[in-house]
Image 1 (spheres, rainbow, N blue to C red):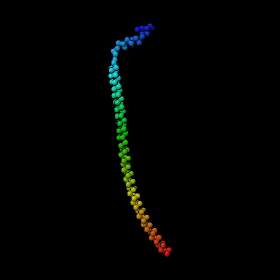
Image 2: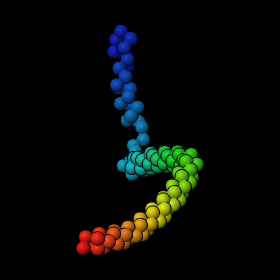
Image 3: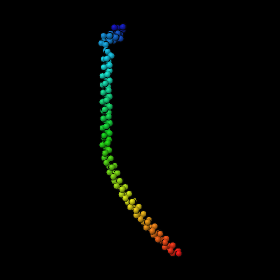
Image 4: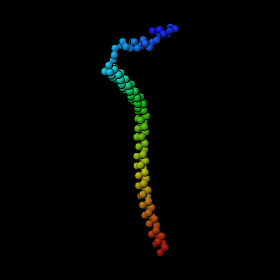
Length: 121
């Protein structure tokens, strides 16, 4: 309906259109809302799954890239353990020899003290 100067009152047309539109029930609206929420939840679940999958692939790639370094570190550790074992074995031998030398020297000192005592008498 024209109100003047070529201006149309659209509000009346909207109301008339809505009055002729079929009425939706709460049950229908609930069904639409439930379907929409279900689609949104599905989309979110797929997005989350894709994100997690991407992170897993990224971590797998990182680990695979570190395997050569891990192997090298293990080999280095084995070499160092071998060196440490050899050093401990040598230290034990040195300690045993030092103990024997100390015992021998103690015997010599005792003998010399006996000679000194005999000479002083």
